[in-house]
Image 1 (spheres, rainbow, N blue to C red):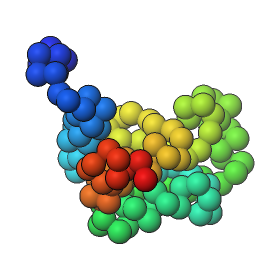
Image 2: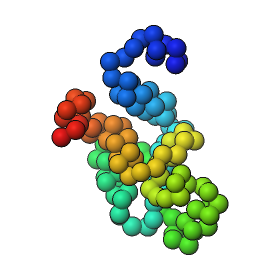
Image 3: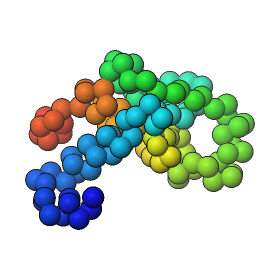
Image 4: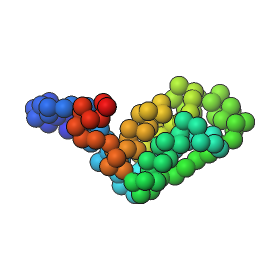
Length: 117
């Protein structure tokens, strides 16, 4: 797959990788799991994007004491939430999670300049 990517030389490599990751993670067995505290906060925009796009996802809300235990065990990247788990991969940072949710929900613009604005 990497060789095909190199040979095809897509114009927008970042877009290609986002699309490839979305396709690889879009089956029912790879339903996105959003991990956050039992409040809106930094995960709320991602939840809203999933809801608006009618994207099936699992909303895991972790109580603060449980988070402390799981953080000490090293279960979350960067030891922080929100985390979006897709197909065994865990991605952190709220804007990355939101961008992914927006792509799945078809709310994220295709045009790079439009996406920037």
